[in-house]
Every structure is written in C-alpha cells, then in structure tokens.
Length: 324
Image (cartoon, rainbow, N blue to C red):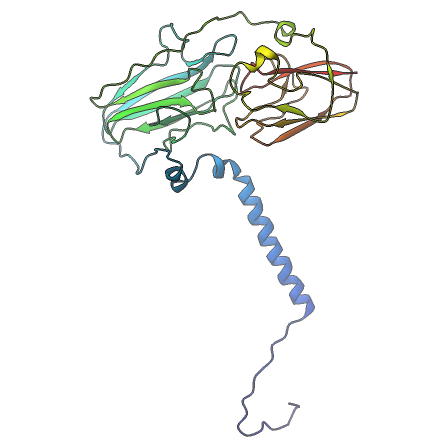
C-alpha cells in the first residue's frame, strides 16, 4: 500500500521482511567462520577422540572396562617402571629382561588402595602405558592409568606419571599399549585382594644378540629393486618374523633417482614409523612420525647414496633406499 492509502476493511496487513545482499554476505561469512573454527578444534584434539573407544562402543566390541570410577580409601603405593628391550628388539619388558631379577614386578594391593606409576622409556623404541583388566590385547585401559597412546607414544628418554585405584578384587595388568608390545613381554600383574593369580610364564629370550652393525642388519648384498611408486608396510609387519625374509618393508631395498619422490604406505593395522638410520640410532635425515593404519609418508632425497631406515615402534623392521 502506498503512503496515505487506506487499508481495505476486513483485510489484515502482512509485513514483508527483506534483507540486503551485504547482510546476507556477512551472515554467510559468520557461518563459514563457525564451521572452520569448530573443525580446527575437532582435529586439534584428534588424539583425544581416537585414544580409546567410547564406553558404548567398547561394550559392543566385548571389551571389558571399568563401569564406574573407583574410590580411594586405602594406602598409596609407588611403583617405578622402565621400558626396556633386548638388543635384538624381539623381547620387551619392564625393569629387567626375563630371567633377571626385577622382571615385570607384581604389585599386591587391597581394594581402595592407589598405586602411582612412575614410568620411564629407557629403551630405543616407542612405548605407551596403561592398566587393564583384560588378560590379553591392549583395550579396556582404565581411565587415568594411561601414559601416552599408540598414536602419541613416549619417545626414548621420555616418561610420565599415572595412577590406578583398585575398585574391586581381581587381577589387573599393567602393559605397554602399543599393539604387539604386550605379546613381546611388556606386561605385569596387579593383584587386588585375596585372590589367586595365574602364573605368568616369562617370555624366554631365545638369543640376546650384541647390537648388529647396520650392514648385518640390512643385508646390503641384496639387489636394489627399482622404485615402482609406493613402498608398503605390509600386514603383520608389527610382529617379529618379517625381518627373516626382508619383507617388513616391500620392497626392502629400493632404487630411486636423485630428487625422485618416495612414498611409504602403512598397510598394517599397527602404527609404524619410517625413520632414517640404523635401528635405535636415528640420523634425522627423514622421519615420518607415527603412521597409523592407512597413512602415507613421502620424502625426496637429492644426494646419491644408501639410506638405511627402520621403524621406531618395531625396530626389527628395516629397509634401504638406494639413491642413484
């Protein structure tokens, strides 16, 4: 209706609300800003989201975890633990190797007691720590008992402190939560209350070898294979044995040209690294950091020569890049 016109009798006035293109643009900018900031916060906390399954997911997967928080009502115990490895990296343990005094010490406590763990990575590999009621695997870690995760582990020389409160009688286990390390010997018992603990057979160190020089570890007499696009970290390489046939990285010895991009793909379910240097002695030429399942890593080498590399999580995994 124009100015001064009269509203017809019996008709209701309905206002029409409009905005300008400039205001619409500002609104869209604000919405996109909220999305970007929210995404940045989400991905910056990625290790938190993936560190352990949600309780409902764990229940569906059959993982036994604590159903409620334990209450501290008793004594405080303290336990120092050091991650250690045999010289061939095949046997892992806490404090001492199997057969030596102090190997994987058992902890006796009562319901309501608290044990404080002072953990030190005294080895040359990556490790992480936690307490679980599960008698195998690395799931069901009690919240608050964990130090590091498989995707963000303790590097050599690093350490941390955590605690575990015994909420009920039973057998618990402190372990390295990096997949495969418990099976190699990094596990000890926590006995809560007057219960019978199963006898843990210590992992036998079949052969504790002196550290090999890189030529022996890498078997440099193998013929380099021309690079075909991707070097695979194959399924199962997180367990010892692939080194017997040089199949921890496939191909094991790869020939590339100067300046050619080299890509590795983690086709295993366990986390790995691609770290230049001989096992236990990184030389900082290249390092992938932690590669989770499905991740890739690429590097370009501009100088000719042979570049040995290995996995810091599983140091028996070795390979060579031959740059021509």
